[in-house]
Image (tube, rainbow, N blue to C red; front, side):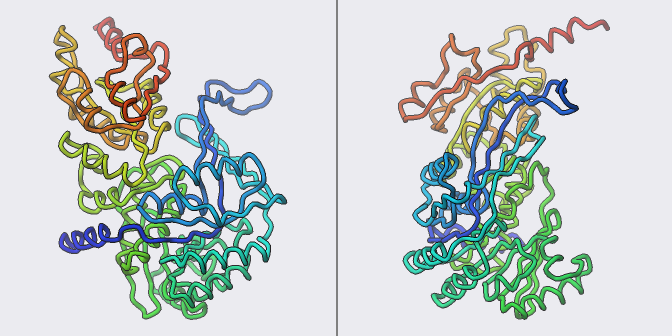
Length: 490
């Protein structure tokens, strides 16, 4: 897209507002177990994970709903949960995200689906799935049809993970009723039989899912186009939206129109949930009256943001806007000025982000810093790092030796970390003015500040926020590194 077209798309995105969207499908509870690996078990040749913390997120259809809330949509989530403690955790997450869970039905005969990922140093070591796959009941289907009639959404998104919430008869009934009501229907498919999704507005397979359904390779553009149009014709679809990972997204419509959007080059940390982001952004666009072409450009930008984060992540409308308008900003637009940071964070908070702020010199970044920042990021959904300017570091260190690394380089290194969402410098000797400008929900400092008192505590707590003292890695510090270098033989 040329710059004028991008500006027009951004304007259309800003005008969408808060359309009502119904998400129906397999709801999954994602559990993340974070820890450290320092040895091999004497019992078997396996790594020993020393657990440090756990957190839960919505996965599957729940992650689609979470993405839609982050975009600003009014969301109703429909699916199944078990009558178990994990179901209660799922309900709590739905409530905290201001998602309507009235159409989530409890089935005592099945457990809540839980995917537990064990991670060390931000890398998955093991995934454990807890599930029982069986089809939803006719009573469930009737309840969801009643929900569709009552809610009258601007878009219906069907999130099929093959866990039983969407058997063929329920799919056929809800698609037929939605189309009769004039509601756009998007399907994220699991089955290779696209006949299950007949008459949907669009189906959004990834490359592997498309190839299984079409029975051919997508490598040849001509064969891909022929097979795509055949699937569209046979199953009475309006379009296919095929995601190709680092190769971007391709839209093929029933009238033969084809639109390809190339993915932007960026560091990829985790593709978990990228498909959920694509269908959420596409559904948000259609619900707001935009075209499928507009939708794939927005979805491509949104997916490019979430693959730079660990686990099932979300993207806000303002982040999509920034990705479209500033594709070449340093470190993907993470580095911001003092003038930019306040309004940007306010917009992100309005989109549902829990803002975490920490600050420091971060001179000679080391493993202790990385662990500290990962800990801070896990306390919310967006981490802002304030960085002392060179002048303020010099005022704090009268020997004239610091900083070793200049501000611009310190900020670029910080911005390259997946745990860090935004980086901003500050000139003052303390971060109190930065705290006032950002108004974080959580302020984090190292536990070594317990006796000194955390600067900005009163401002944060006065707004109902919290101050957290993070554990520090023993024996690791910039000062120790510098002293070691100074003491090394020439």
